[in-house]
Amino acid sequence: MLVSACLLGVRCNHRGSASPSPKAMRLADERRVIAVCPETVGGLPTPRSAAERKPDGRVVAEDGSDVTAAYARGAAATVDLARSSGARQAVLKARSPSCGCHQIYADGVLVEGEGVTAQALREAGVDVQSEEDL
Image 1 (tube, rainbow, N blue to C red):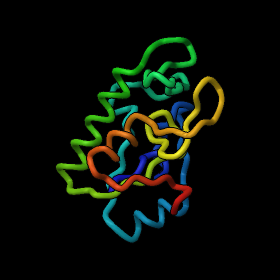
Image 2: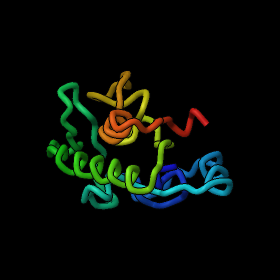
Image 3: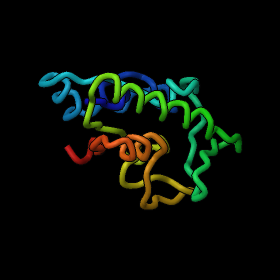
């Protein structure tokens, strides 16, 4: 099972901090999990500008820079990790432009949608859920 690294206490979110989830941490105590941060795997620094996934699929940072390629690299690497490890499930950070699996931000508004990695994992056959689904 893949789990967003920030949910397990790794300081890798865009602010340079963690987003620890007691339920995700308990899950890690009970079974084999692989921590992953697709944004850092894709080459983005920590901390970094907040970003949003646009309706056309691009990911744009607060400063206006197009970071779609980094998000796509991170998503592809995460799918490769799922395949190589045999992971069939993923618990991802809610509302993230990479990991959100139910809702994401677009133009400052919370909308139905998926982050880049959540979509790629789902399309690869991985069961994707957020920490809020635990």
